[in-house]
Image (cartoon, rainbow, N blue to C red; front, side, top):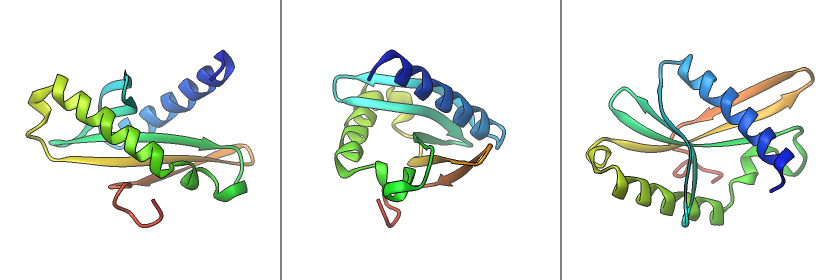
Amino acid sequence: MNREGRAQGSHYESLAADWLQARGLTLLERNYHCRRGEIDLILLDGDCICFVEVKYRSGSAFGGARYSITRAKQQRLLLAIEHYLERHPRHRQRPQRIDALLLQQRGNDIDCDWIRDAIQASGF
């Protein structure tokens, strides 16, 4: 990904983090990277640790943001989560879930669709 793409991704991840924090979640980490993959956002929702995949799309072509979380992306995300939990064993005992926050441009606004337990949700 080029510098402009990373900057845009960082912008939308910041919007997503702010949006989730406004709903009571506590941000633990952003952009957790390892050789296995990456996790966009890691937050606490009460006692539950939430790993959040953020996807932005400017339009709904090709199904929009929902369909950009492919099976391969899910597998890389699961490997990154495993790595994170190996490095942060205190979180291993917490309830865990994988969410998706889908950002879709609608005119001058951005719609947010928060899917809890996205990996198990139908359509993923």
